[in-house]
Structure formats: C-alpha cells, structure tokens
Image 1 (cartoon, rainbow over the protein chains, first blue to last red):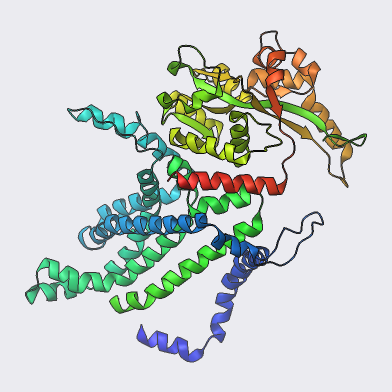
Image 2 (tube, helix red, strand yellow):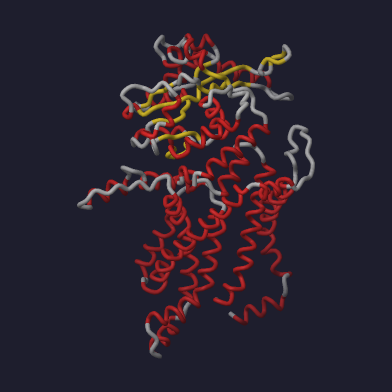
Length: 289
Length: 234
C-alpha cells in the first residue's frame, strides 16, 4: 500500500489527469458555474430580466445585519444542526460498531441493507410517512395506546421534536456508513492486545476504538451538519408553527418573492458561517483524531 | 389590468376566494365572522396558509381595511400577532388541509373556495366554506400570450379550449374547479352547483375584494412582516 502511494506521488499529477478530468469538468459545469452566477446575483440590486435596471450593491449582505430576524434564525438552524448531528452519533455509532465488529456474514448484509434502505426512497415520501406516524391519532399514538394500560396522548406533529426526528432519520445512514468504514478497518488484534494487557472493555473503547474511528465520526458529522443547517423541507412539513428556520427563509426569497439576490446573499452568509465553524473545529478535531 | 388603455392584454380564466373553511364536526352552526379565528376555544386548531401576501391581506380584512390599499400596517401586524398563538400549522397545499380535517386536527382556517368545494363534494370531507361578513380575498387567473411568441394560433386555440363551457363542466364534475370567468361556462353548470349558487350570489359579490397586482416592493415588505411574525412565535 505504502509502496503504491510512493510510486503514485513520484509520477506526479500528469498520468492522473485523464482520470480526474471527467469529474472536474462535471464539477465546473454543474457546480462551479451556477455557484459563481449566484455569487454575482448576491451583489445585484435586481435580476437583469426583461431589461430591468440593476446595479452592484452590498445591500443584500447588509440586510442580514440590519434585522435581528436573520441572526436569530441562523442560530436556531445551527442549534438544529448540532442536535441532529449529536443524535446521529448516538444512534449511528453503536449500529456501525455492531455491523463492523459483532455481526458477520448474512446477518451483517441484512442489517446493512436495512440501514441503506431509506436512501432508496424519495425524501418527500419519507417525511410524509413520518407525518402519519407522529400526528395525534396517528400510527404511534394508536399503537402505544393499544399496548399501554393507561391513556397517553402523543401528538408530536408540527413541533421541534418532529423536525429532529425527521432529520435524524434522513441523515443517520451517513453516520453509520462513515463510522462502519473506519471501524471495520480497525485490526481486531489491537482490541485483543488491549484486553490481554488488562484494559477493561470501556478503556478499550475509549483508548483504542474511538480514537481510531475518529476520522469516520468527523466525516459523518460534517456530512450531516452542513446540509441540516440549510434544510428547509423537513422543518416546513413537520415543524408547523415552529418550522421557520434559516433554510426556509432562503427558500421564501427564491420561491415566494422572487428576490434571488437576497436569497443568494443569505445562502453565502450561511456558507461562510459553516466554513468558519468547520475551520475552527478542524485543528481540535485533528488533534482528537 | 387585462384591459389597459383600450388594449386587451389577456383573457380572464377562473376566479375564486381565499375565505374561511370549517371542520363541520367542530361547529353546530357555521360562524359568520372572521373573528372566529381568534376565538380561544379554537386555540391550536386554527390554520392559515404559509403565504405572506395572503396572510397580510387577510389581516387587512380582519382589521377592516381595503386589501389593495392598506393604510394601517400596524393594525394588520397586531391582528396577525394575536392570531399566531391560535395556529396549529401553516398549510401549503390542499392535501395538508384535507388531511388535517380527515384526522380531525383542526376546526377552522383560511382556505380556497374551489378547494373547499372539492374537499366536500369529491373527497366527502366535513368541510364547508364560510365567506365572513367582513369579506374575503378574491383572485383572478388569466391567460396572456408573451410578445414575440412563435405559435400564436396554437396559444389562442389553447385559451379557447380552456375557457370553453364543455371543458369547464367536465373539469368541475370530474375534479372540482374554481369559478369560470366565462359566464356561459358557469351557466352550463347545474342550478345548484356550488360555483353557481354560492359563488354567483350577489350577496357574496358585495363582500369580496379582488386582488390588484402586488408590486415587488410590497411583496418583499409583506414577506418581511410575515417572517418576523413566524420567527417571534418560536
């Protein structure tokens, strides 16, 4: 492995170019160009449609700072991102551990399939299914009341917990997959060595398994945190009265009032904040890893 | 708007109302006032559409103003602010509304006339439309052909088909539709059809206010107000 890497780096980038070209061409056309257009829009007073007058301005960015509304929502969205990521770790990491270290053969394949299954269904369908489960008189409410001897009333629909549940469900497979990959790569003999040298199971977990699987945890957290902060579909459908977040406000600017410049500016402020957070977290996380 | 400076810019197609609709199970007799939305008895069982323009114009009617010339924006804001604690959720599609009525989660809310009729006649839901004495927001959809179109004849044929009484009657009976702006099409409906009996009544015509075009500035102002209200409710 190390030898191969050495050969690769000695040959330089040139032979790799034909392999990289399709991906980078695609990224340029599909991501970089539209994104650049959005950066451009975010500095405009109006969209140049049907010969409308427009000029360059910083006003769209100033709007963010002139009203406390946007900051409040941004903080609410960041909190949402942290909470969802945390729940994904709590639920996803143990599942990934069991998949990587406990289950073998067919049972592993079966469980793995169940983890990936949500990826095969449309996101909107998943959210609407949650609506049926969570509402008063819904599947969860009816099922629990049929089993429990006392009467409880479960109406989670249109609430903050409903948004969390919907988002965690959508994103937990990312955490399972990234952690599974790093956990699987841990040599069992390291764990056995730790145990034979007198470490308790908890110590092995803390000193061997978690540090070695940290890259997977970090990758999973980043994959989840970033899209959740900008999410708008789940809050809108499951959140009800409490479902206004930074993502839904951006969506409104594009869809409801056709104010692309402000929508784009708000998006790039979000991007900047997320990059700053990841940048600040990187050294800490690297040391931990 | 469609007829400007003696020139025709479009063909009116269908119109309807953004009024109130109720869950019949929650009322012995239908309410007549818009104030019912603010009744503490319905706390947590009221819905309003997630649309800034509709919400602000609804607030204008509730505070006794002209929806196209809102003089006292503070009154609208106060009205809507006091409505917020009543709200269960902001609906965005007919499906939202109908599901919530079907599972008996709401009592009353803003709704479109055509959708309320469709919910009752086609989906057999306990929904009825209420056009409050204070008024309701009326909207009109129209067809226009962009300047420089390549297939004008095709576009005209399409418009003729869409406003044709035969197509309209089929649309109303099979799917449920708003009120046609073509009087001949409405006359082709049965006497007791909702779109003829209720929507065509002169009593209703007196109370409703048609939406004039909304400028971009107004739209953005309304959205800012609406977002502020939604954020403060959190």
